[in-house]
Image 1 (cartoon, rainbow, N blue to C red):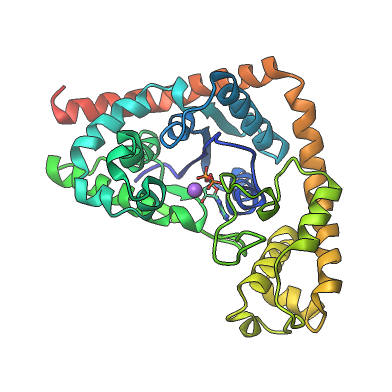
Image 2 (image 1 turned 135 degrees about the vertical axis):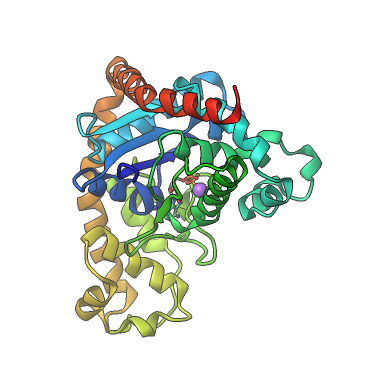
Length: 333
Ligand code: ADP
Ligand code: NA
């Protein structure tokens, strides 16, 4: 039996969004107080697969994401918080996994298809290999559970496939078959401008997302301008079918309020968006303003952030190093 252990990560590829918060970080925080050991990573090696950053920009975004984690409630005393590139075992295991994973598996990934675009010959090899590194991120800790948003489901299935094939090829039961944890009312927060696209830090339109660093006015304005349909809110969840924008705003409300969609609709069903939007803004500001204030305070202390990451990477290595060593032994190295 494996120790119940959670691993997850976020790329320092830009400012954090409400999607990252509700789909990932808020879940990470809740898991700290359950029966798991919790390990949370800033996956900087993933961030450079699609775009190279100015070194200073990447360094700042790494600190900003760390500040976002801590400001949201991740506690370095309860969880291991660290930066992927500081623990070399991730890339060492990733190489083994590159040799286990099949080209066809990688080319089927929808994120690869989306991000590589039509000219795949010009995409980086790292972008194609990204999910094998992600599998290594998880397996180098023998993580049993991985909380993520819905968009990462396919990559987690691939991680399970890699673990299964490794175990099978070497005749061992060494890597766990990790469970994805995709739960809550906001596993896929959509763009505020287009109900068919997910909210993302890499969307060129700032109006499409709420950033954790947005102030109260920006949050209120983005919600006021969010795309909706002309009808009032339904009083039951079935009434959201075929109404992606309405569903999205209700999901966001439910997740922020820690309520079910049904409970939210019992309160706001029948209201037009002109009444619901200010209620949603008020809740969003109430929940997010303390996070952005704390992030700004932490960003004044970069040395403290670096010290937390450096300590976290030492702790991470105490788990990862023996697992990598055993992997090498299994492989014959
Ligand atoms: P992004 O897509 O914003 O660049 P990442 O790829 O770094 O973010 O994802 C970090 C975590 O946030 C993952 O668990 C991912 O599933 C989650 N996540 C990202 N966007 C959303 C969203 N719009 N709704 C819910 N979860 C999301
Ligand atoms: Na993502």
